Image (cartoon, rainbow, N blue to C red; front, side, top):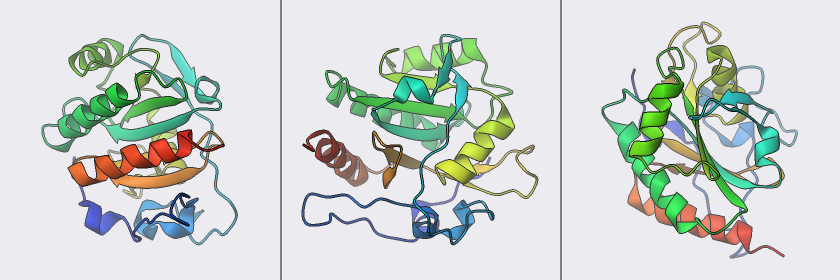
Length: 208
């Protein structure tokens, strides 16, 4: 598994709009390398796709479990020795910050679902203190997860096979609002980006 740095992956710099608003992002705002060819250059408003995954408890998780929620999602794999432990540690820290906010949740998807079965995910979840009601750490159909990464969250680089081979995932944390819109992308290994993400979640949760 190979990783690309955040500087290569993101083609834009996110800023606050009017001091308190966050941008709404679509395919055109991302490096085309991250966007499925069918969506490159698309101008129409983008909503993240519905999904069906299996979490650390063997439960089926769908978009309905995140209905009207603000959530942060990422792509990882449990055997990753480099960036994934840092990403998961930072997700755990975010979970702690928003522990008592029922409007905020977290979603992690394995990019090696054929290896990351439910018992393995359960141990990983316990290691990182995942709370069942807040943070789903998931596996599922590999092609489905690939399509989510490429067509929904723009967090993986195409390997040219339609999703049947391993693909390169990013260290990105993707912030999704209650209307299923992408509102920000952050380097899940960088402390400064974690501060920015924390502040951006607070902006979304404090909206009237």
